[in-house]
Image (cartoon, rainbow, N blue to C red; front, top):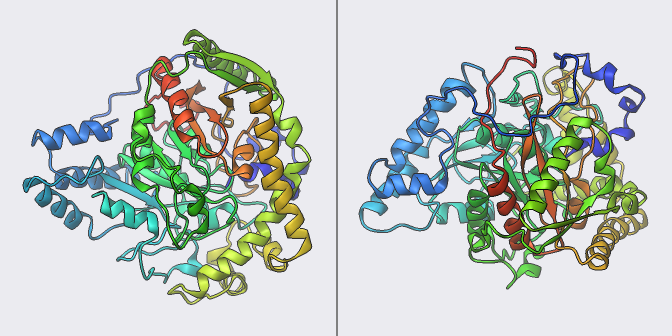
Length: 543
């Protein structure tokens, strides 16, 4: 999740931004006001699948230039060369020993004339909080779950296999999806260590779907799955120059995923293009009897979200830009203004709105909701897990008993806060969840209706911050993940440009089940702006 939104609950609130920034990595020289408003080519990347899309790979397999096995071998080699060696991005926590066998099976089906769909034979990485009933662990990055082999696939993994995708492995994440400590460092886990941002290696790729973000950005796979409670898909997508879609809660099933919040959790696609994200979104949507939230989406999910890919999709649309985003970091503001010009040049009308002002008091209820739901959901998950820990209390006890390895940099204040909460019948919880979910929905819907808007926009969040295992995460400026997260509404981020070589995304979100609408807007902006830039793997900002 995007811990920046809860920073004030910890002692970091008393430290200045400049103090935290200088603690760990190089800073920009002199002028921080001039953003890169146009995309530039990165250094030559000799990897033959660099920036390849799902469509590219399908065409090559159809033409018999590649097989799924060859694609899988190339990505596995790439992971070895730059994730485990070279720049050592450390985004993949575990490889699937059965990946090549899966690829061979898909090749045999293709030879017989059977192609399951656009994901047939496509290598995919998934976040290590999603169950796979195979040789891979499911740990949420925690040593406490290092013995956990899931009994069966998560619903979305079952859908992934049905679609013919090849599971390359699992990605590292912020431990417990960044819900362990008020002083945590995103992209670090006790099992997986620290994942790096591929653009500048001493920067943090953001959490909690850090490994998925880094892996897709660095071309270690074609597409990946992330999960989000508040920002954990859109933030690492933004920071890594990707397209990320956080669906309406209920479009993708959550059963078989280690939970934080039943009202806010969802998995979603992370990709290098809107089209790939739309293809992936289509394949994994579906009603799951084990997740009651998916029942609300019955008849609302589209079979194919690529039908919304319209380069003229901004024409005649009305967008509300968050007013508070027009102030702050001059570089971010310049990127946003440039994006607005692009949107308007393609026929959109952009007006200022003040959603964050409406949500100022409502947002205070979010953290208590997550504490209650995390305790309840995790206890349910662990009670059926193949692990030595069976409750949240067991996890806390394990960490204390193994402190040197499990908690070398920061502790587990958030886990302990959750353990101290009661059940979901507690009055505090019932009041808070109503205010957070229903209150946020009401505020968003009112702004959309009153201003006749198709979506609300703003920068997804600031650029990648320094990796700082001593002080933990710090505020990186404006962030826009919380409104859609608290409401359970769909949210897409699309690359908006670079600030000192670090990507920043543009967010579009709307009301429930409007994935098609925001995909149309995001695609039209993507095609008009072309801001995706490959990473350079720079050692530091001055290198």
